[in-house]
Every structure is written in C-alpha cells, then in structure tokens.
Image (cartoon, rainbow, N blue to C red; front, side, top):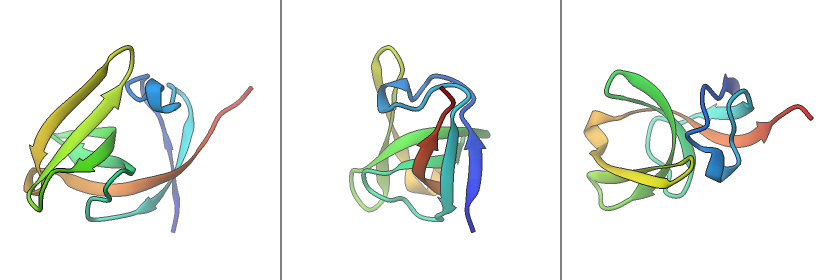
Length: 90
C-alpha cells in the first residue's frame, strides 16, 4: 500500500517539501533514521525528518526559514508513514 499526503504548510520547505506538494508515503510503524516521516505527535500530524538519538529518543527536525528540532520519546510518537517521493505542479 501507498498513500498520498498533501503537505499542509511550509514547515519542511528546507527539505524541498512545500505547502500543497503531494508526498508519496509507505506505511511504517517504527522510526527510520534519516527518513522524512508522517507522525502523530501531541495530537497533531506532522511531516518531520527523524534522527535517532538512542533506542528511546528521536530528534524531530523541521526546516522552514530556520532549522528547528525537538527531542521526543519514541513512545510518545505515533509513526504512520515514511515519505519516499514528493510531487508538485509546475
């Protein structure tokens, strides 16, 4: 199975994902180091780049105008999908 996710904002613009881009995703229930993933965190869905810190913590990275990151416990995050391709209209 694959899913298309419509990027809701420019929070991943530095990683070349802009508002309105379609992101092709595949289901993934666990974190993938270095991947951009669709996650549930604090009752919201986000696209974030995942960086594994250890077996219990990850760094959630976004990049709009400035690079931002947040440390979170893996147990607090619902991993939904791993992003594999971005499509956009010219």
